Image: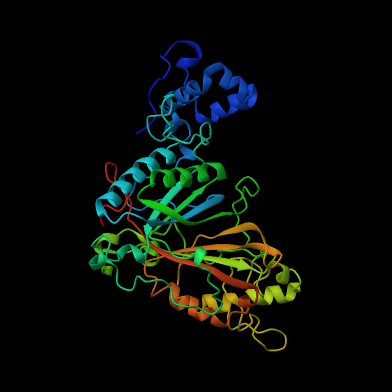
Length: 428
């Protein structure tokens, strides 16, 4: 439910004028947060925010990505600036508790993505607020919240073993894996993306709070990329190795391609997943200190692309065709045989939709090196037929010299939610 209690009575003057959340932010910026709070009080601020909601959709539609639809948002939605990812373990053994959790998460997610406070107890001095409040006054920042369940969700706890999609298993061991238990698996996966980190964190924090008694956090990871403010042209983001990441993605505007590559279909075996997608998450540590000592020629040979333009070696443009038959002046393959682009691209028959972010988690005290890398996320229609064979092709990837896979998880992301429905209702 949205925050509607204790609104000021509509009056003339400023109270009759629609005010957006951005306006509220500006008010805080111009007059100072203290002045705003001093004039309205905390309850007044939240109450005023409730008043603001009436006009938010029309006034700030560009900041809102609709939570409801045939597919979950956050999959083919153009990537936002930041990510907060969370994996949960379910602690209850009662399926009805999980169903109730999904309903409450749906209600909260719909409110958050609309820029509203969660619940109705945000101005009662005798109760803990139903929303933690740190996103009050901030616009929705195109936040999306995407939910999925892991293979362990289909064990004997909830009677869902027969609904487990064929082949939906934890990923097998790959060359370069150095997995750590603290970054693996989970019963539930929640991907939150937004153009404001505080807005994204607010979502994860409140979903974890709502889950108390039913699920607990297993691991989390925050991530970032260049912001829309620093690159208004929206060029392909660069990873922490300095190279463009995602050049080969399929066109998210092409519905037929998305149906072929990303969206599970009703005839794929698990009918409850029709319209959903399978997510792979890999926490990939980059040995940045080693990478930084390699020459530009070595770096470009590792990726098979020019660092500056992103073009395949021997070409000029980022999106030029990757010519695997091209030769250099010595008659050798222009794009090295063990380069990442050659192995990953191959004949083009294995496609996935990448949605990755860089991460930096400070210093690894055991090595004295930066714990930084890539939170790799991909969506595909079938992990066994797309991601696994693609990853196996990368066993001889020269890039493996510079990276270690520390985390791994897979999630079946539900189809979209209709208004009045809840996430996972086709399953549970």
